[in-house]
Image (cartoon, rainbow, N blue to C red; front, side, top):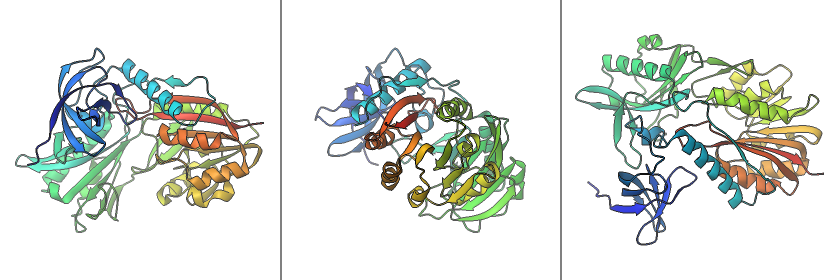
Length: 421
């Protein structure tokens, strides 16, 4: 077994990504999970590179006043910021967002606002669990951060209770049918706000048995075969479908349909205040175009005239969600450049993946010059990069951070930009 080096360090600050930063005696930066600024900790190095290392805390020798006891034994796998108070979490996230924009070339904003989370527990409407088998049976599990070892668990304190109830029902049924952990990859469970659930089960065998009793565990279950070359929750082929896996929530008084694996917000209560801020950037006469549109949530609520989305499953649901007046473009953003609007009453909404805007999209924005841009991001680093590229022509009139993902280091940020006179 590989022996991991141990060190004792003083932790300096939290950085984008969620780790605490320190320095090893040899001068290398070390990014540490499970620690807080100001703490003296014993750490185990989990990854060593020429210029930096990664580590996890083994023992807290001098704790921070902000430290609290985590609720979950596997907190590092799902929500590594369970160790701090809610007030400290909000403050750290605001500071990280401010530093991210200060270090980029984005400028011109006097103040960044930050909206605290309404609740810090049992908010998440989507969870993914792995499986582990031993002599006592089949278990839900997650990989321990920094290792290839799995940790048995019964659920997560950040998940809606209906999710863990469904995951456990599926686990019990699989165990009853003598399904081995070695034949399973992962299960994703999703819940709407009233507790209806649907699940996607990813298996390693194309001849996986047809277990019809799965239909009794929730509203709908889809079983997917996933090859050994694919990540855990990437489907190769659909094997079985039991019931209806499409859920519905009401967003700003509009019904929105989505599936287990859809691109859809995991914290619905935090979404509506953001939509209100986005709506304040619009007028009734605007032509609104929604890029990276997912199932069409913003296109529906903000009355977009066009939406652009690549994923076919999202497109099918968008056809149920958006109004007939909204044209649906089934293509990638970089292959839909002709749909980026120009004119004094045009608004472009973008909610890209963590990689940010494609460079071709930025180039076309600069060429077409839509009057306003509403940019929602789950990665402030790439958002700041993109805004810096746009600021020759656009002014950043508002930037707000939102705690969509309590007890995790993830930050959602909304930027409102206007074409300069």
